[in-house]
Length: 323
Image (cartoon, rainbow, N blue to C red):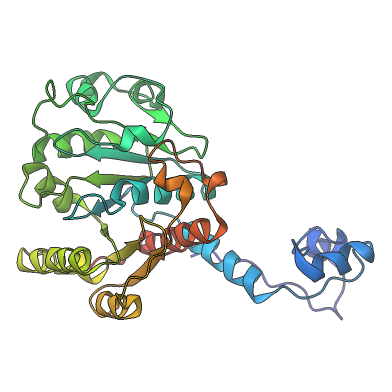
């Protein structure tokens, strides 16, 4: 394993390593980005650089985790929900867009709903091609430019492979179909996020879970939503996916404005935290409620922060946590 050479001691003879940008370019690195620290820094012309705030350090740590290299070369994340209308597709796009914006490698989201999925509603489509078209023409895909004919790209750099928009003309999407598409995608993308259907017994779900490196389970912060999510974990454990449960991230997604609900959110978080690796709470956001294209810049700050936390938790798995 290669390690960087230690810097020469301050009292030693100067070497080329002594001329590093951090010491020579005043203010180039770690300049305060906001608040009173930024005011002091600018007023002093960069001579006074107050220490970073805990908030800045915490965000930098989250970004670093989200940028964790994919050690296996390709990593599959399945986004699940047994109950519809809880923000599963929104979470898929929010997670994918955040990762794509933070990282330099390629990230794709795939709509694996057996019926008409809504993933394609979350960005401006560049093509009418679907996952079925890619499946039918996969033998002709040799280069990245070939596969881009089947995907649409958001401003965040997240690419989306859509499903058929008209369920009356769509064909059943099986587990074997998903595996075939996945074999193509792994040659061109580092991260594949799959927006799954709500049926655990559908054939495609078997293909998704059989290949998944980790799962994100989405639930509403309600009694029925949480019970459905916990029942999903029960089913997974009973069907030999206990490792996915242990390393799962649960997202409690508020799809409605704050109400006078009597549900104890902290108890919900504690319940899932005892079963899974992490729990993230995504707050209600008017932009997400629109149900149209998702633009990260239009999200409220707490929502962007929640998706960054989710990206960091998922990023922790890129180093290979699955046993």
